[in-house]
Amino acid sequence: MTARLKDLIADGHVHVIDGAMGTMLYSKGVFVNVCYDELNLTDSDLVYEVHERYVRAGAEILETNTFGANPVKLSAFNLDTKTEEVNRAAAEIARRAASGRACVVGAIGPLGIRIEPWGPTSRDEAAEFFQRQVRGLLDGEVDGFILETFADLDELHAAYRAVRKATDLPIIAQMSFGEDGTTSYGTSVETAAQAITEWGADVVGLNCSVGPAAMLDAIERLVQVTNLPISALPNAGLPRDVGNRKIYLAAPEYMARYARRMVDAGVSFVGGCCGTTPEHTERIAEFVAAARPRKPTVYVSREAIAPTKGLDPVPLEKRSRWGRKIAAREFVQSVEILPPRGWQTAEMLEKCRTLKIAGVDAVNILDAPLSQSRMGALASAIIVEREVGIETVVHYTCRDRNMLGMISDLLGAAAAGLRNLLIVTGDPPRMGTYEFTGVFDIDSIGLTNVVYHLNHGLDPGGNTVGNATPYVIGVAVNHSAADLDRELKRFYWKVDAGAEFAVTQPVFDPRQFQGFLKRTGEFGIPIIAGIWPLRSLRNAEFLANEVPGVVVPESVLRRMRKANDTSDEAAAAEGIEIAREVMQEIGDAIQGIQMTGSSGQVERALEVLGR
Image 1 (cartoon, rainbow, N blue to C red):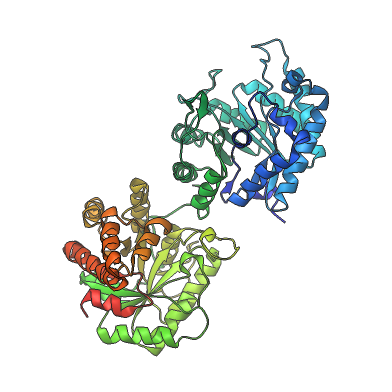
Image 2: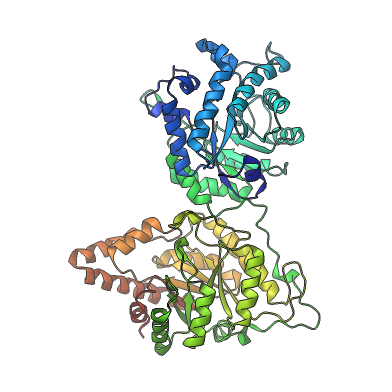
C-alpha cells in the first residue's frame, strides 16, 4: 500500500505528480466541445486508462478528472445537478487506477466566473459552489485536495475554505502566474505564497500558464517567502498554433531537466500541466529519483571544523600509498573492478592479482553500479587488500544507507584497514532491476562532510569518536554535465567540504574536457580522468544513450560504426585506440587515470595503459 499523502508531504523527499488529463483525452479523440468531467460517468474506462498510464510512468500522486467539475461550469452542459455524482465517480476511477501504487487528490479548479470585488458572486457563494465538489470527492475517498490554476487569490481562498470546512485532509494550493511573476489579477508570487502560508495549507505551488523556464524564475522567488513544501507543475512550454490546434512542444527530456532544477531550488512535488503526457512524467520521475529538495543539502566548510584539542589529523601523505602519491602530485593509475554477483571471490581476486603484477597503483571497487545488487564494496575491498595486497579505492554510495548506517560502515572499514574512498551519491533506484527505495539521507556533499569530520575525530554533531580516521577523500565530478554551472557549484562544495581528489566520468572529448579543467583549476585538487576503452559499437551506443552523465560525441560513434563494419575485433581495437588518444591528449593536464568500463577485461585496461 502506498504512503498516505500527508506522509509524502512530511518525508522530505521529492515526489512526482501526474501530467495533463485534458491533453491525453484530446489525443484519444475527445473533442474540446465535450464536457471532459462528464466522461467520469459516460466513459470511465477511458479516464481509467489515462490514470493507469501515469501510474506506470512513475506518478506517485494522481489528480482526479474534476478540474471543471463544479456546479457553475457543469451548468453549461446541464450537469450541475450531477456535481456530487461526477466528482465521486472521478475519485473512484482514480483510486481504482492507483491500486495502492499512488495517492489520489481531488482536483479543483476555478469556477469560471468572477467573484467579488471583480464580479457579482460573493466569496461565500463561491465557497458554497466549491463545497458541492468537495462533498463528491470526499464520498469517493480522495487522500487530499489540489486547488490549481487559480489567478484570483480570493477565489482560491474560497475553495480552501470549502475544503477546510469539510475535512482536515492535506491541501496543495497552487496559483497560475504569467512570465512576469504576477497573476492576471496583478498578484505577485510573493504575496500569494505568503497568504497561502498564513491560511495553513500543506503545500504551496504553481501550475499552468507558463513553461518550465519561466516557472523556475517564479519558484526561486517563492522559496524566499515560505517554509511550506513547494509544488511546481509547468506546461510543456508555451502553446503554438499548428494546423488550428494548440500544440505544446517541450520535449520530455527538457521538462525533466527543469524538474531537476526546480528540485534544486527547493521544490518537493513536481509534475506537469497542459501538454504533458506519461512520457514527460516518466522522464521527470527518472531525473528526480535520486533528488531531494534543497533544504537537506547542507555542507560545512572544512575551515569551520577543528579537531578535539590534543588530537591531530593524520597527514594525507601518511594515510596510504595512494594518499602519498596524491599529496606529492605524482601520476596515479587505477582500474575498476566489479564485486561478484554472488559470494565467491576467486575471479575478482585473480583480476586484482593481474593488476598488482602489472604495477597499477590501486583497484577501484564499484558499489552496486546501475542499482544492481552485488557483493558489498567495503567487504570486497577488505578481501582484496587482505588476499592480494593491492590498495583499493572504494566507491561508497549514499543511496542505500541512512547517515547512521554510513558512519557505522566507515568506522568499521577504517578499523579493517581501508583508507581510500570515492564518495558518490549513487544511481537512481529506477535504473535497477528491482523494486526498491533509495535512502539518500544525505548526498555526496554531505557525506564528504561526514568523512572529513571523522578524519578529525568527530561525528557530524561535533562529538568525539576517539582517534581520527585516516581516509583519503575522493569525489566524483561530471565534466560533461548538461547543466555544467550546477555541477561546478556542487564540485566546489565538495572541495570545500573536504575532498582531496576527484574522478571524472569517462572522457571521450579532449577539447571539451580541457574547457572543464580551465574552469576547475582554481579549486586546487587533483583531477583523475575516467578512461573507458570501448568494447564495441553496441557498448558505445549504450553509453551514449542509456548511462546518465556519460557523453559520447558523434565523432567517436562514427569511428566505432566504421570499425564495426569491418569486424567485432576491429571495433574493439578502435575502442582501445580512442582511449589511448584521449590519454595522450589530456595526460599533461591531469594527475591520474581511472580505467573504467573494463572490469570484466582487465587485459584491455592494461593494454591502454601500456602495461
